[in-house]
Length: 205
Image (cartoon, rainbow, N blue to C red):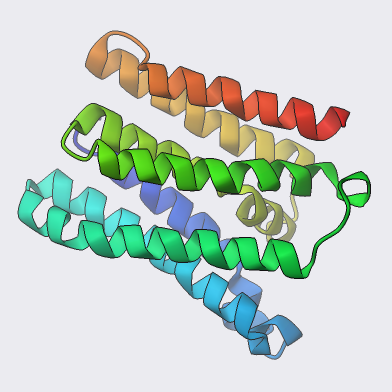
């Protein structure tokens, strides 16, 4: 589990993203968003992020730390692209807080959190236990739109599918922590607490 956990979970999230946007890629390539530059650029950055994440975890699995380090800068640039392109979409499709759906409100919190976690992951890149958890949890925070679309394409109830996947990934991280560290890492449990604080704020306001 120590060797394969992050490769397996990052591959799983990449598969989810492919399912989520399978209509854009395969079944409905003529849709309007496929000709909208802001969505194209955003989609490319997001796919690049998941692909790089899988490649990076494979480098670590194989012990190729030099390649991991070299690709790391590209990953940071792509993460910045994810954040900026998402922020631009937020601005373009802006709705007042009162009229914004609760799940979109949550994304308004999660995307800055993603950027903050990526920053700290880069800052603590030489502290392995912190670095890999910050990268992993940052990616969990950007899953909202992917899970929404994946549940639709899989004909599953979004209000069941999303919590099952999100909580399942967090719980898997707790299990990984316990097996490897014999404790749950602070980044793991604090990020989980923040996850539910965001949802509480988004639903109740």
